[in-house]
Length: 294
Image (cartoon, rainbow, N blue to C red):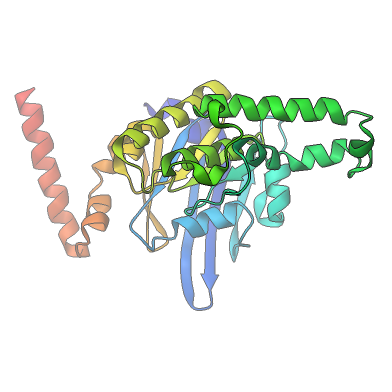
């Protein structure tokens, strides 16, 4: 990907500027700036404790940052400053949806019901806050049909349409992960934030996840920001990778650029700062020898 084609520079759906989050004397995120390109899959990676989930919590309104600005630009052309909005407005108006590290499905409800819960707000508005829904008049019936159609679309997309009436808790782990992503997509987001979606998945399930996320980007036009430790997922599907260490950005670029960055290698290997130059020198030697063979 050439610089001129980098959507995170030319057409960002989300721009984070100088984000800092402090908890007392602890600086969890330190002066972080990055963008998510419209239609891109952007990975936010780093060792444990790097501040990745804290960034997600700031973007989605669970935390109010100490300083900084986060601008979300949905497809309707509006601009929302996320640091000023409560979490439910971030989801409803700014069109940002998320999943969590731990699965948070309603295990006793059916798969279909879980996806209808995600569409609770538009259904409540159409029902006149229950009165029109009880009477079955107004636009509620049409809205209800639309919600069911959307839910069935996503069940089909994740390969679970045959289990629509089964309890969500009866699904295997990988299927529950996919259902959680489908539930987030039922809110109609322009930005989907996924917190370690491949955690606990076997290789086959990880491959299915990759296919689903690529389909969400290409067929549904939704931008994706994900936190992930599975490098096969990150390097396999990401357009853009941002790397954090101790709350500070140390790399920002394409998967190839970040994979070869000596600071990233040092962060993941846990080496001291003085060893970074040695790693960089070794990388240069490897690159030079590969160029000589070519």
